[in-house]
Length: 307
Image (tube, rainbow, N blue to C red; front, side, top):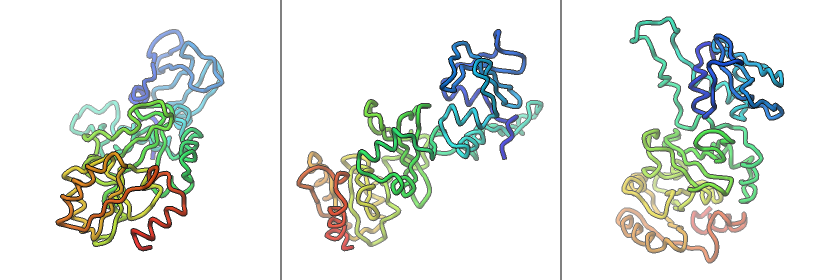
């Protein structure tokens, strides 16, 4: 349960690069002030004040008022459920009067999630339009792969968060730009924040059965298109850790379907894997796997995976 009094408001605002006034003509004792984030407000002088203890806010310009969750929902453009999770992330577990440092557990280590705190289940139109422009059905893709969205805050603004699972637990993530204006298009979760770094795992590996067949692609969107029993290496190549993961999975037959400009790399990695499994290089006549239509996907799965 959230105790608003124990939520570190300044940490929350700092992480979102929001300028905070702790003193000044608009700021009374026990309050902080920020520019009002509500779009209809014309605030230019930090008229939205927040009680540092209760986290109740009010804008003296537009008269918007509410509690902590309402403020988080507006700043992060997220649902009430996600706002509650974010508040919990910033909740401390000690009183300001505590003096015994051994009792201070403010670090929130048991609450820190791998996914960005700005990630939300509520997908803005921008993100939905990106998926639809690639001919993906958001109602199917989002829940199947646990996708999240980051709207206009934080280091991953304007990106879809793609969780990376291993043994059905999130170990890292990649973030895909949906604005077509950011480089690189994909950002990996920093290794230090991952349970298993992105280059050391394979996307969608949990859907590959031991001693079964699998199709290996470069990108996550290829996996979204073709479905279970397909995996992605996130790049045109394989790390030693990814090779070991394929071997440990005891895959019976692996089809490598890399982009045409990565054929030589694919051949080299296929040679490394052939002592442990049957490997076949597959190429498309045109385009990439993420552009396949439903009939082509069904034919591909029937031909390679015998479904």
